[in-house]
Length: 500
Image (cartoon, rainbow, N blue to C red):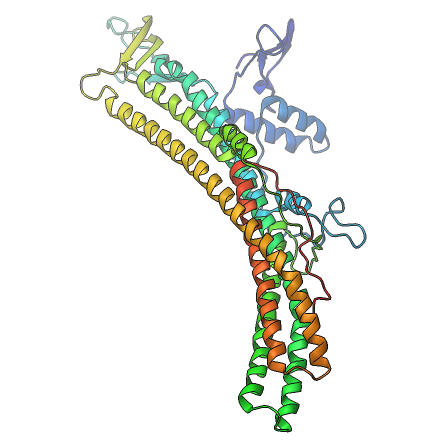
């Protein structure tokens, strides 16, 4: 191997340590031509590191210079990496808990599934990078050694020479379709980005849903706990009356059954709270023992029709899943262009340099092409066009479904809001009746059956309010995910703690 030019007028000689593997700078410092194989480059790097153990910085610099890629193992983790506490920036200060937006932000930043999804973006970026690289030319080499062993000078074959042939060719179709291939890969990368953003939207919706579930379950417990105490008090009163033969066995048994029923409701609310807490910890990527304090939940605000219409108009530009489908369609458009361009004969052109056994040197060129007699790429064109039509139909179906879901959720929210308003108007009167009968029952002027019947009515009404409120929140969160609208709370949902 000849010496390499490092600059204008400077040379470096051959070296046993592989210095002959340095790049050659042709005309500008940034134009580099490699003058050795990758095997030589790697061997030179390793030998240099072994022979200069105290010149680590120099070896590292030379490694970077010649493009050596060093292997380093990356073992799999052996334990979880869940956080043992909330991030300091998000942890609530004092008794105030996290609001819904803070919980959603923490979920997006720390959710383990989203971390894994973001790692896949490196694969999409690498694929886009690979698609942007120009195709490599094809180099060929052949050698022939004569076996006649001619030694006589009178023999016309004397002297014999070792023959060789060199060739360099390039595929013109790869160059012709390169721009479309790169466009397809770039669109696929943008599609992966939009898919990741849509997954983040879904995580935000799930975090908000668990926030609502935990808050409403806690409100149920706060409401049912004193009610269970009142039921137990009424059951004890019935038991004493039964001992005095003042009530029937059936009535006393009904009161005990009512206690069992209210305690069952309380147990269901407690289990719902535990499930929501654990689901929220999982979304936030924290350990099971971490406490996530929440602020009191407020009912959602309702969007008017004009806001919904405006949200629908900008839906294709706002919803990440629709944007992902758009980029997927653009990528497929590029695939159709590639298929159309590929129907023309594939031409490979090259140059050759050869010497035969009689020392005759030749220089020439080669052209090879496919004969489009049967295939002509028509099958691939039909497949790519059918795939494009399928993607277009899927996009239209998703857009239609988004429109239908939006109006369905909005209409349902209007109905839920009306029912919740009617119930809120009746609850104060029912609450006053409970207070009045409670005083009469405490004075011994009201049978336990009548008192428990009124409490049952109040519990049923308040339970319906919790159900309506949770349904209203679920629809509001779903509407925000469908349209990208902001979820905005209004007033406190916790009932009066002195209701019973």
